[in-house]
Image (cartoon, rainbow, N blue to C red):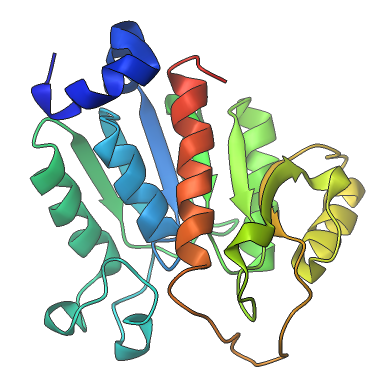
Length: 225
């Protein structure tokens, strides 16, 4: 066993840790939520990680995105995240796709054990949910974390049981039109503090959402949920 992950064996078991090493996870969106989700699954020893994001690091990302530093401004987010993951676990196979995910994307989701959706675009989120159902791959999707200040209001639930979150409401309505009634999500029960566009954000809400998503994935893949 890779000794880098030996401290989790007491919780996930040796077999669970080995299952993680044999698992493949794809993460869409490497921003405030997705960068923390990516790092957490890497630090749990997931053996194959694919990162999908079209964007570069901007100075305005520094307040909340794990990969955003003054030294990484202007660099591709997927490449910065890949470098971090490979430094965490040199045995991890990291694949990057610098792309905006939509109906023109050609990604075979059947090769993955779990999908993490941290995309901002509603259209892309809906299309990804449709493709996940077709591929029969489990997915967890991030709802809105902007304009929020209370990380303890974040919850994981099926989208049919969400409340307060405007994005979850819109997603729920549009998914039903597509015949999709179930989707695991992380969402907040906190009323938005403001209506800023783009949304206002802090360091400690998107990050917690990303870690919660990663936790669900890690427990599922190690058969601990």
